[in-house]
Image (tube, rainbow, N blue to C red):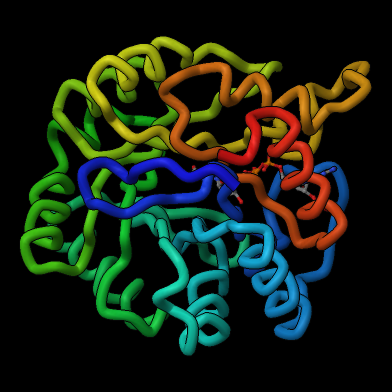
Length: 265
Ligand code: NAP
């Protein structure tokens, strides 16, 4: 598995990251099929397999139900093997999300995240935007909270998961360490953010690289995962594609497709 630098942290992340929405939440999600939350044993096996395949990057969030708690409990003894990305600003309550990007709320959220993950730091913390990206970046106080957390050593890199091109561009302009954007062969509206990030050296995490499992919804290409990963890494800005799965066979397929798409080194 090839690795890429995470901003200027000195850390390297695998080009394929493991998305963990499905570890902790199966309500109000938009995947093609409904599913039961995996057992602890199933998650442990999946994490073992991911490490065997060379994956060291895992993405979670307070908004992913019990994902953070479960990762904290199951990874505690092997914490140092992983680069953890989490988020702040969105909370999920049963069937709906609430958002708060005030400095106080983001700081409190980071502390809760560290406690749930049973760790003293996360390698990257992203604001989990509600779509009002420019407000979040310029008027909420959230960036001050990230700067303070970085200064305190609670987070190594800071950024935002955006929903708009303007927000992604602003994040790059502000010099944040990382952005998380949606980019796949069926949705390339945010490509300008990748272009700017490549220029600036901002780390880019792709969410929904497989179109959340829909692969565009229409007639899928013959090798949809490989097609999507080839597309993701054709752009020089891409640091890692965060692909969500709770199916070990899919995880293996995704790693194989990644090797086909971009090679191993
Ligand atoms: P995704 O990674 O594009 O797709 C995940 C879906 O694809 C799952 O339903 C998974 O089902 C399926 N899948 C995975 N590998 C497959 C394969 N080889 N063949 C067929 N189906 C496959 O989309 P996502 O989960 O929406 O996004 C990925 C991650 O990005 C999330 O887990 C999360 O960490 C992050 N994310 C962040 C935000 C944000 O606002 N920051 C938003 C969305 C997502 P199986 O479990 O059956 O494999």
